[in-house]
Each structure stands twice: as structure tokens, then as C-alpha cells.
Amino acid sequence: MTAKSEHDHSFEIAGFISLDTDLKLKLKYLVQALLDSAEAERWQRMEDIVQMVSEACENSWKHPLYKEYAALLIDYLLSYFLEVRSSHESTFIQFLNLLNHLPITIESPLYKPLVQAMTENAVDPQQNMTIFDRLQALYLLTEIKDFANARLMYQEMEPMVPKENLKLWVVLQISRIRLLKHEDNLPEVLRLHLQSIMEAWTTEGCECSINFILRWILSINWQKQLIIKKTLLMRIYERICETKNLICAMVIYELFSLEDRLVPYPEKISYQKRLIKFPGSILNVQQLHNLYFFAGYYFCGVLSHFKDSIQNYQYSNYFLHKSWDRLIHMSQFLRLHLNADAYYHAMPYLDARIQDLSNQVSLQNNTYVESLQANFDKIEELYQKVGELSLTDSLTGLRNRRFFYDNLQQMIVLAARHRVPICFCIVDIDFFKLVNDNFGHLAGDYVLKELSQMLSQEFRKSDVIVRYGGEEFLIILFDIDTDSCLNMMEIFRQKVERHTFEFRSKLMAITISIGITGESQIDHQCGDLSQFVSQADKALYIAKSKGRNQVVLFDPDLNNPNLHEPT
Image 1: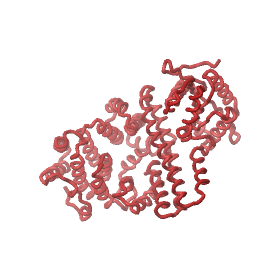
Image 2: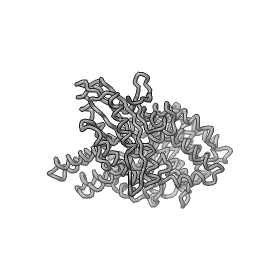
Image 3: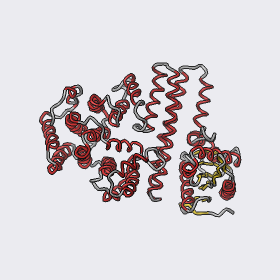
Image 4: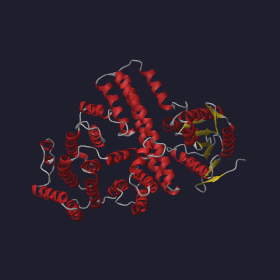
């Protein structure tokens, strides 16, 4: 192992490790043997490390000693890779950056660089793209923690991904590490970490190895030993702080995200200022939201710079909406690449992500209002404005998803007490992507606004119309049975089909699909409205699978949507 440079003495983890000196030296020797070994011997050197750590930790990554062994392994590996890393960025790092933005589909601005990465030196470029789409689905399943589906998909994909194709292999292994960690399989988790680091080193160079070491650091639940995590991160940061690449961004963002007791506010804001100057394609929308949200709070609550605070909250709100778009896109992508049963199984995990994002919206608005209160006497007027904006979709003027989850419950309870039947309908614009592709996004916005106006004119003031997703609208109709609702929705479907959608002298043929569920006796204690949305969504799924431009009613007796002809 290469001798330490002067930089490596600034951040030492020895003081945080309880292992005795002999164990530290033995582990250091094994890491050095791994780095010095020929390729034929490398597997055995890895096994020696895996065996030592697994036995000490009783084959569980939850064992308290695992963090210490992992920290030492990472520290020894960094001593080598930080010293000999190359002066230029590997093109493979650029591919790894794309994983921060999955799913990437044809309409994404990152699709072109993805195609270039996947088809470079490829024998069968189309097959690579097909496999990568399936791997994206696997990666997303592990991200939302649907490990049952992920296990089945991994078993399907593992024989299809050759180790020689490092890009595909890496996505498979990152997903597999998450899966094995969920299954508490320490030997395999550790083996894959080491294998990924060494494979990246031999094929792409030290820069890529550092990326995988960093991913290892981030995968560990450090809990009360977060000081070790900060020490390892600072060690990397000390050597790469002048760069503006993915590794530097990952390190700085993790330092920024550490607890306040480890990273005080002034240090955090310095990291925030650095990160927002990075190229826009490096950080994802959720990370950008967090950065601007913190800055909004900091400038108001700490520095009392109201103007800067408002500006950062506005940016934060923008990226929060982008996070909603990404979640919707993720759901659509999984629906496309999973069969019906698998997607049904994944829905609760997607719902959990929706709830997390809803909580962020609530936190954003609450913090924003608190900031205003600290700076203005007219807080009541501004609070009302902020609240109204948070419940209204800016494009269509309709209520938004937050209104549905935060304000509709009381209306449902009141209707249930008076035994008023309720119907839930989801309206989806057919082939909306083609509108954007063929006529442009401004045309797509026009269609959304025009349809929103038609919805507002068609239904009663007592009915609730919500822009639920990109091109999806949720309608809740009170005091109506399912037969009447079916007829009403069929009439509306026909009106849309006959309506002239004209944008800049270009005519567009627009149709809609509608899924319906009805309930005549809702329990007044019902606290989960998502079950009704889920039923309407299943009916919508059938409508689209049967050719679109039709209305489908969910049949609760069969727990399966059946196609109904309106009476």
C-alpha cells in the first residue's frame, strides 16, 4: 500500500475505534494484500476479509462492531486510492451520475447522454437499452423498499447481465446490495462492496473506486457513530474540494445533511453555497429542494435576511414540485415495466413516498409561514395567501393533491354521517405524451387548462376537482350513485372527444379515459381515502389497457374492474 501523504493525517478515525491494535493491523494487512494481489488471487484476498469481518460481526451488518470494521476497511482503502487517483474524471463517473436521476426515459434531457453511455462499444445497443430499462425498474423498487418485487426482478435480471458490461453490472450490484442489506446478509453485502471497488479500480481507475467507497459510507446506518462518517467524508473532501464532479458533490451534500451538532449552521450554509454552483445535472431535485429549503430558513431565522429567504423558499418550492413530477414519473415507469400484480404490490410503497412528500410540503409551508411571522406584522393576510397557493395548482387553477389529502377528509366524514353516496373518478388524457412531443409543451399546457375549464363548467360546485398528477384529474362527486356517475362521465367523455382543441392554428384530437369507484355507505371513521383512489386508478388502468377513450367502473365484489356500458 502506498505510504500516506501529508494530507492523510488531518482526519484520523483511530480514536473512535474500540478494536485492539492486533485486529487493526491484521485488517490493514489483509487490505494491503488485496490491493497488491494479482487478479487471479484477488478473490481469495476478498474472502479472507469477508470471513474475518463476518465472524466478528456474527454475519449481521446490524452488529455494533460492523461500523468499526467497515470504517477501518474504508480508511485503509482511502489511504491508497486518494493517493494515486487520476487527475482527470473518468467517463464512467458521468454514467454513475445518471443513476441519481432515474428513471430516465425518452422525454428526459438526460436520455441522449444515457444512450451514448449505453451504446458506447456495445455489440447490441438496443439490447443494452432494453436491459437497462429493466434495471431501472429494479433500482427503483429497491429505492422505494419494495424488496419482494425487487428479489423476483433480480432473479430475472441476474443471468441477463454480463460482468463484462460494467455499466449494467454496476446498476445490478447496487440494487443487489440494497436487497442483501434488507435481508441482513453481511457476507454478501461486504463481498459486493469490495468487488465493486476493485472492479471499478481495475477497469476505470481510482476515481471510480472512490465513488464506490463513498456509496459504501452512505449505505451504513452510523447512528451514534456519525462522527466516524464525518471523519471519513472530511478525509475525502480534503483531497477533492477543488473539483466540481459527482464525488465532490456527494461528499459535500452528505456533510451538509449531517446533524447540527456535527455541522453547525455556518458550515452548512457554506456547503449549500458551493453545491448550488455545481452543474444542474449532478444533484437531483430532492437534494436541490433540501438545499434551498435550508437556505430559506437560515437567511430568515438566523440572519434575518428576508429577501434572500423568500427567494430561496421560492426555489425550494419549485424543486419540491419537480419532486412530485419525479414521483409521478416513477409510478408511471413502474406501471409500464411491471405486470399488474407486481405493480399492485408496489402501490403501498409508492403511497408511502407520496406521504413523505406531502409531509415535506406541509413542513415547507409551515416553515415559510413561521419565517414570515418573524418579519411581518401582517402575518394573517400573508398566511392566507401562502395557504391558498399551496392548495391550488398554478397551471390549471384547480385544487391540487395537497388539498385532497389535507382538506377533503372533513367533507367525506360529513357526507358519511348523512349517508350521502360518494363517487371517486380519475380522468386521464390519452396519449398526452404525444401532444408534448408533436406540438410542444406549451400545447400540452393549453390542453390541460382547456380540459380543466371544461371540468369546472361540467360539474357542480359541491363536487371537488383536483389536478392529481401530470395529466390526471381526480373528481369526487357527492350525493350521486354509480349509475348516474357512469352516465355523467360518459357524457363528459363524449364532449371531450367532440371538443375542438386548437393551439396556434393546429388542431389536436384529444380523448380521455376514466376510472370510477363508488361507495354508498362510507364509514364516517374512514381515515384512508387512498383506497378509493386506488380502486379508481385500477379501473383507469383497465380502461387504458382496453384501448382508451372509455369509462370503467371498479367492481368491489370481484375486487377487479369490469367494463360497463353506460345505461
